Structures are given as structure tokens and as C-alpha cells.
Length: 613
Image (cartoon, rainbow, N blue to C red; front, side, top):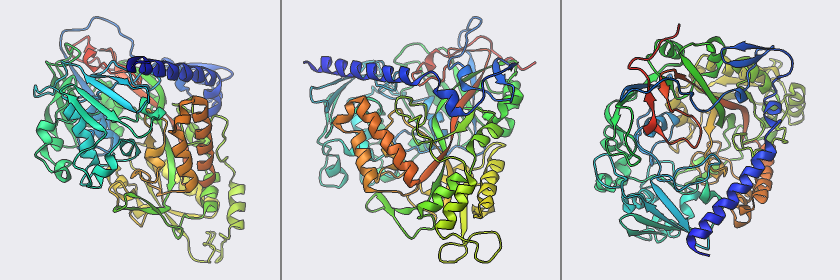
């Protein structure tokens, strides 16, 4: 079989299996998992159905904007990045770590490989690919008209250079992990034992060949780093200095439909159309991105200050469902919210987690009791009107073929929580209503939670009060919520774990690839609980083994992994999430679907955004 035929056959097989599984898992799961009552009478609220108890369903929303009217030539669009803090400003795919920076980058740069609605790589992006008979050797061909914003062609050496930077021992970012160590010669290059990566070959100016150690199903859905880096700009900058360089912070370039014209650090970015975009003429002349505080996002949309936002606070939707100048788009988010427990530290030298059984939260009975103590069904209904709902496992329903909808997680049962704590020796020794640890010492659990939006503080307080009801003294870290960048620094994004943090509430956007190794692997910096076990290693390895090209086998492995996380609880999921995006009526050709890569087609029907009536 030829390389091209092998690639197409494998791709087609994966697609058929994924579609079949998705079809089997659709129809009935969503309402049950959300725990919302959709039976009985309902009333219209804006364009969406609301049940008689005031709950909404994400199934009632479309992912693509309805087009009405005729687009004007050119025009400008205003985009709101909803945040109560400045974006960090690390504007390069190799070095960014937070979702806000990714939103900024998305407007001016893009991946070499696009994905379809099932998260599989396609040949529709700036590069196409073929695979050899072994499934280990990928050959990529960059299209001839793909250029950087400064006019230089995007070359195979630029893509190879991206791997070299991340694999460098001096690399300061968070990307290096199993996706890179699976490349032949990467370990030796990273260790300084080789001057190049033997598994990466620049065949010619437009052709790149990568040889992997193992053929895995993840290679088709996110296991290949899809971002190039302009070598002609960065080659004279030390890798250790790149993340803080002006080329990343002040004057970033990419290959996308818009290019950065001006930037106010942390606050706004002005983009202008890329006259040399590889897919053709860009409709809009200009895009302005600005940070919009969650408390003022409704006003910004109503007045037309912004045409759309990255994500709308779903707790504000019921009061604004009938906003007349927007259409609400929605979908199940590739994300979940969670409570994490500090179980160790990060070993910077070995670049892996270092579990520590002496940590305050090391007792799984304490962690399980804390999960039993919180009612996330009530949280989803009270705070989010059903647009977030009780989470059960660490693979969300955005990946229906691998989310174990039959796994109940740990149910809300405060009496069970008390029993577990009693049996584990957490008793109220001094009679103050709060439990001491099994040694009879005062137990104060420091809780780090992020600021942002109207629900952040009452939600954190709800969890604290729920734990108090079972006798646990949980206190906000420093007595306050932490802003986004500070929060992730303190839980360990820099590799330094703040010893004051015992537990934390965070949220993860999951990748297109279902493989959770990047968040829970032994060598994953994002493994903030610093959890590791032999069984976890075994299951994560099995999930990307050759046997897991059989989707049923991979599903079985990840069901076992989801149960392991329910049993060991390094973190517990709290809520699955909806994405809601209100889009001004003048905007055309916008979508929030995972396979949408058409920003160059965005258009507006009027010079000024219509305001709400």
C-alpha cells in the first residue's frame, strides 16, 4: 500500500469508528448528564427554550451565526476578550500558557494542520500530510503561497525550528512532554547529547519529515505539534530569552488572515488585514481586540462597543437572553472545572512530578469526603441555570466517544462525607466544630480560587461553606480570590509550587486529542496536583499504544483511567461547561465550531454595530 493510500485508509477507518461511536452516544446522554428537567411546560426567553424551573439546555443553541443582509466591502470588527485581568502577553504558540493569550494569537497566527469536526487532522490547512506503512513517519508538504506577515515564505525549517526550540534544554515554556519525546532523537537532543533531532528531517524548502518512536492514535488528533516558528526572526535570540523578547511580547508575527498593527500590553490589540493570506482575499480591513471586564460585558454588547466576545459569562445569560442586537451561539465546551489537591511538588531538574505522602491532602479519604460534601447539581442550576452541570469524570462530554457517561463519579452525600472523615480519624478534638487531623492537630486547608465574574466569590464561598458543614476548616488563600496570572503562578505553572496552597479550584480546556497525559502525566508541568502512580503511568501509556488504534480498546482504557481518577482523586471535576457567544447581528460567517478556520471570511453588513433596543 502506498503512503498516501495508507494515510487515507487509516484516516477513513478512524473517522468511521469515531462517527459510529458518536452516533451511539448521542440521544439521551446530554439531558441525563446535565441533571436538568426538560419535561413539562416551558416558556420562550429570547430565542431559547427555558424550562418551568428556569433551566436552559445547551442543545438549543447553534454553533454558527445566521447570516442576514448583504456584507459591505471591508469594514471593521470589535472583539471582546472577557476577563477581569490583563492578558499576559506571551504571544507565540511555543510559549503561551493561558487561554487569554491564545485568543490574542488566534487572530494573527494559525496551525499548519487543520482539524475536522471529529478533531482529526485534515489536509485543508497550510500543510498537507502523508503517512508511511508503519504509521510512524509523517511527511508534511507546505503549500506554496503560505507566507509570514513580513513576506518571507513559511518553510519546512520554520516548523522544524519550532520543535527544536521546545526540545531545547533551555526552553522556558510548558509544551515539552510526551508528544515531543515520542519523536526519534528528541531525548538525546534535549539532554544535550546531540546537536539535532534525528527524527526530524527538512527534505526541502517545503517538505518536512518527522519519524516517531511509536505510532499512536493521538498522532491523528493532536499529537503532532502543528505550529511553525519564523526561524529568520528568532534564530539569533537565545532560547532562554525568547519568551520575554520583543518578538514575542511586542511585535509578534504569524501567517494568519490578520497581522498585528499595534498593541497595548495586556489591554488591546489592533489587527489589519493580511494582503498576502494564503487562502485568498480577507474581507475585513481591521479587527480590534480589547479586554472587557465581565461586569461590563453586557453594556459593551448592547451599545455595540464590541461585536462579539470570546465567551459570555453564562450566569448572565438569563437576564440578557432577549438582547435584541445579538444572536447567541452555543456549544458544549471542551473544558471542565475542577477542585485540585496538592500531593507533591515539581522537580525542575528531572522535569517530572515528585509525589510527597506527607502533604496535608495526601489522605485519599479526606479528598473523597470533600467531593461527597459538594452538590454540583445545585451549583449548575443555581449559579448557571443549567448551562453548566454536574461533572463526573475527567474526560468531558465534548468527547462523547470517550466520556464514560455511565460513571457516576462521587455523589453528593454530606453524611457519607462525615462518616468517611470519622473513620479516617478526622475528629473534632477540641469541640469547636472543626475537625483536627488524625494526629489531633489543627487542620486548616488553604483554598486558592480565581477571581472573575459575578459568580466567582459566591461560588468559592459555597464550597467553603459545604466543607464547613462536614467539619472541615477551609479558608481562602490570603483571605481573597487570586487574579488569573497570579493563581496559575502559585499553583505551579512556573514550576514553583507555593507551599501555602493546599487545594485549588481551576478549569482546564482539553485538547482535541482525548489523551490526558498533558495534564496528568508524570512529566506534565500542567499536572498541578503533582500526582503520579504506576497504574496511572500504565493506563496513559496504553491509551496511546498501537492497540488503541482500535477505538473500542482505547475507550476501554480511558474508562479505566476515568475510574482510577474517581478512586484516587488527585482532582475532582465539578462542572461541565457551555460556551455561549453573543454575536452582533451585523456580523456574518462566524462560528465557534471546532472545525472553523475561516476568519478571513468574516464580514459585516454595516459600518456601525446596531445597538440593543
